[in-house]
Length: 265
Image (tube, rainbow, N blue to C red; front, side, top):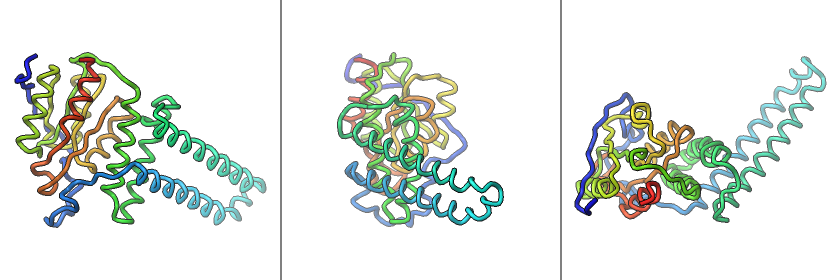
């Protein structure tokens, strides 16, 4: 298709409002002009803290319940302690494999055991911990970047009719025009979600084999949790120079690369 081709723009309405994650925003300018870029190491540090905190919490619960568990069966606390120790070992090995997969450039586990499996749960738990330290958006950005790097290494290919591009309604005109130009160039449809649960309804109706989604870090985390375990997704985060849900911008070169690689153009 010629460079000037523009994709068809399809609006969908669903039941969870996009941008609801920003309901507490007070109208002030966002840090760094709404750019929450962060190195992957930030996520890994918070993820390690999350795993350790979870294991310590489980150990504390076991310690407190041990006297009552003994009444049920004398050996039960010991059995559970060994089970917890095994869990520590498994979590440590898995986290080590995650690090090697990311920094080594080769995915060492199937996607169901890595970025589309336990990693999704770790992302969300780590986000909860990061909120305690007021680092939510930066940690989520780093987590999404790690997820995308692992997903890209699968080198998935789909037909043009099997790929969906999902975008929010808050893009700037320039960003929207750029997205439509890219989608038109590779002949893939673009859906604008005016309310939440953006992926589920489209997926149910269109049955795609892959999705390229655009959202801020907070909505992207929700979308990945909802969809990525069931369907391959690449998630492109936005910058918010005028605050959330207004005139957002994105890296069009990254979107072009993702769409081109997925459809094999």
